Image (cartoon, one colour):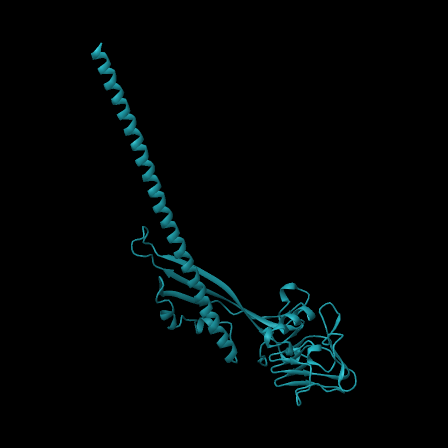
Length: 311
């Protein structure tokens, strides 16, 4: 009887040991799976960060190309359709210092420009929301496009599971516009002053590469854009203040065909604070956008200093 009890106890102990070993193996297997999963996730995240770094570097290569195109188009009188094949875009030497602390292989960076299009005339529709803040709206401009391609390689960090480099590519379209002088009713390279006594109306875009000063004895109406690379002032230029004899209405037609005055409608007409112009300071940019829907702009709206088109 005692032998039978002893045998049963030994069998139970053996069964418990087997169960404990099975559970132990399951725990070890689970730990191994979790550890492998964690390492895999770390590797995936590292590759993802490298891919983002490579993408940013390829975009930087394209930006280098844009900067060179802007410089060439600004300073060259002729820009042929094969310009970028005869005189290719390059990565500047300054890129080496800029990417020195990164994983980017600067020697692998490339930038290449495609063929320059022959160009076409385009009307910038003022009613298109995409053209809201376009300083060339309500004008016909001559546009030419060129596609710029960028490429960059990022090397994996030491110790990464995958040592393969990451390559990224980028392509963007660069558009250049020519707004010829005959596209404006009035184009002026210096300060432009409007101080008429009798009623005056201007049909067509107005642009100054400096400041614009307006006041009117009777009324002054602009049927199209009023743009200045500098500031727009409701005052006399010589005195820098308002003329009490020229407090007539100055208004600009918005894209919907409504006449919108520079006067706020209720304040003292001899006070700068009663008018919407550059004297508003930091508020001028937003106020002009809200009031005229983009047809009135100054340097605060990034209106460019325009050069005559070479034709």
